[in-house]
Amino acid sequence: MFGTTMAASGGEFVAPGPNSFDFSKQALFHIGDTAVTKPMVQLVLGALVVFVFFYAAFRRATLVPGRLQFAGESAYGMVRNSIGRDIIGSHDFIKFVPYLVTLFFFILINNAFASIPGIQFPTFSRASMAYALAALSWLIYNGVGIKKHGLLGYLKLQSVPSGVSPVMYPLLVPLEFFSNILVRPVTLALRLFANMFAGHLLLILFSTGGLFLLEYGGIGYVAGPLAWVLAIAISFLELLVQFLQAYVFTLLNAMYISGALADEH
Amino acid sequence: MQNLIFLAEGSEPTEGGHAPENPLGFVPVEAALSLVVFGLLLFLIWKFVAPRFEQTFAERTQAIEGGIAAAESKQAEADARLAELEKQLADARHEAARIREEAREQGAQIVAEMRESAQAESSRIVEHGKTQIEAERQQAVTSLRAEVGALATGLAGRIVGESLEDEARQSRVVERFLADLEASNGTTSGSVN
Amino acid sequence: MDGNLNMIGYGLAAIGPGVGIGLIFAAYISGVARQPEAQSRLQSIAILGFALAEALAIIGIALAFVL
Image (cartoon, rainbow over all chains, first blue to last red; front, side):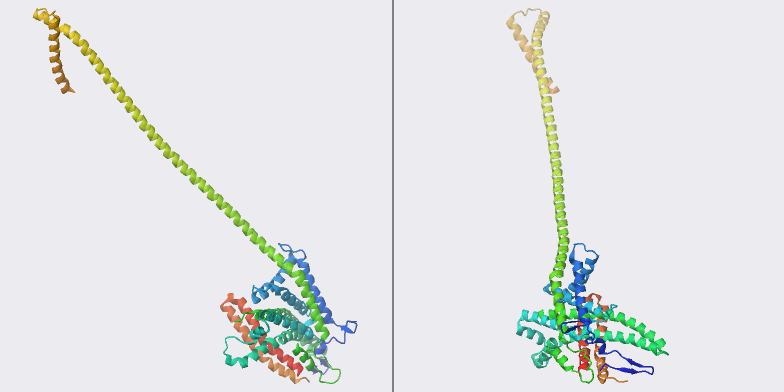
């Protein structure tokens, strides 16, 4: 489907497609029957990096922080205060802070793998991994809401809009239910996946396209380097997108939790 | 989750050939691994990192608040001490005023006493003088009376040429004379005084 | 040059969310410009609106792959 090809007189340029994200034919090693691929290793590596960073930062926590502890505290405090406290509210945000911190830094480091030389593959451009995180988010925010309001109370909270005349209910209630319960996890997963997927695809396209143009010669001697310059610019854009996606994923989680915890209005 | 499975099922390759993997396809192994790794990381952060951070945070807050509390108690102590000093100062001022007042009173009393005693002394001296004068006058009068009697008798005898040796007569004459004298003397002295 | 008509459709479908996201951030920027102290409140609302508008584009890309 993505296998768009561009006919060129010198040769055929094969545009990058979903095949660039398919590692099933290039397993690194096997555990039993399961092929272990590069994204799986990255996932574990990312978790290790996050934990080691925080553990090292807080291993000898002192009142006056050292440089590493200060970095750890700034990172932790950003998620804790600007995402957790501001969105969920100071009453009961504290028990969600570890979840939000883990989520943010786990996604951030796995996204950043797209730009780290030698790895250069965003883990969450494998959709299944994003599905898993979104499913977990779905379980958590619904579980929190049901625990607080009861099943019926929670369904009422999420699907009956306030300040609307009951005449509109037949139209709005299914819509609200659909958007709050069903669509949220799908968009959560797909947003993360699609951004990483598209960003990586764009980078591959500009890099391999630049190379092809150089080999093609002629106008390619100008266009090829230009493509590479653009690839560098896009890399910086991607850095921003990587951060933003981790932030948005965590922020939306906090918002969903806060919405599930909200009192009846 | 149902949606995701639906997506995965709906993504069966439609083209023949080597069946390219759908990028939206659901790979159970990867999803499970993702959940497990995330769960482990969440557990570790929950167990080891978050309590440390919150503890450090609470300690720091406490340290700052403790510092504030200590400063407040110091301030209160200083205030108390200042108030005490001011009270002492006021007491001392009061005391000084009291002493001054007392001294003034005492001085006035002393002056009054002195004045009184001086008055008493002066009046005593005046009294004494008067008494002495009176006594001397009396003495003078007595001696004068005796002398005047004799003198006048002698003189009169000499003038009259008659003996006035007769005691009874003599004294009668003298008495009468003196009485006259005294009467005239009394009027003159009264007009003089 | 061969390709898939789905992708053309997706490109067209992405116009709507693109305009929507632009409007959201335009309103956010002018809001912050008028009232800088409200930035932290506006930011989360803007990102929520951005996420909701982007959801349409995401549903579009999913359908482009699936259909």
